[in-house]
Image 1 (cartoon, rainbow, N blue to C red):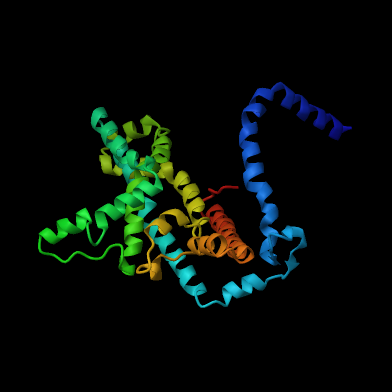
Image 2: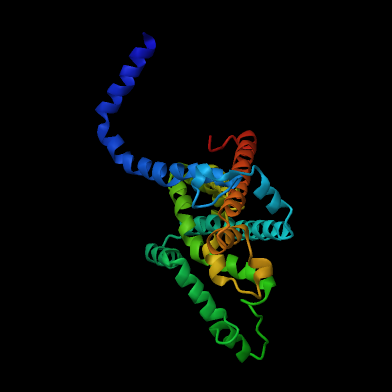
Length: 307
C-alpha cells in the first residue's frame, strides 16, 4: 500500500509540474536518440562487421580486434601521443582560467575589465577550421607571417608545422588562447558567491589584496576547481580529431597521430568499421575508468566529487 501511495504521489507531482518536464524533454530526447540509441552498434567491435549482412548477421569474433590493436606496432605511439598531448594541454590550459578569473575579480575599473574580458572571450567563438587556417597562415614555413617576422631579425625560424617536436606546443598554445577566456566564466560565477564581509574583516585585520585573494577567493572556488579537474581527467584520452587532423601532415605524423585520428582513418577512410569501433570503445572505457578513479580519490581527499 505504501508503494502504491508513493507511486501515486510521484505521478501527481509530475502532473503538477508538467511544464518543467516538458521543458526538459528536448534535452532528454537528444541524449536518448543521439547518445544512448547508437550504443546498440558497439557490438560490432566484437564482430567482423559486413554492411551487407548487417549487425546481427555478422560473424562474432570476440576480442580479436582488440588484440590486433594492442599487439600492433603503432599502439604505443598512439597511446603516448594522446596522453602527452592531453596532459600537456591540461598542465597549461587548466590553471590559466583560474588565474585569469582571480585577476579579473580584482579589477575595479569596469570599462577596462569588460574590454579585457571581451578580448579574451572572443577567440572561443572561432570555429576549429578557421582556427587551423589562422595557425597555418601565421606559421606556414613558406609564407607564414610569424615566420617571416622572425626571419627579419636574422633568426632561422623553427618549422612549427613540419617539425614533430613543435606540434604539441602549437596545438596546446593555440587551444589555450582560444579557450582560456571562456573558461574563466565558471570561476567568476563561483567568485560572485564570496561573502563581502570576509573581505571587510580581512581588511580590518590588515590583510593585503594578494593575501585576501589567496586565503578568501581561492578557497571559495576550490570545489569548482575539483569538479572541473575530475571532468578533465576523465577525458584524458578524448583528444578530438578535428584540429589535430587539420594541422596534421606527413612530416609531423610522428607526434600528431592520436587515437581519434587513427579511428577516423581506420573507420571512415579505410572502412575497417569493426576495428575502429574496437579502438574507440577501448578509448571510452579507459576514460570512464579514469573518471571513476579520480572522482573517488577526490571524494576521499577533498570531500568534493561528482557523485
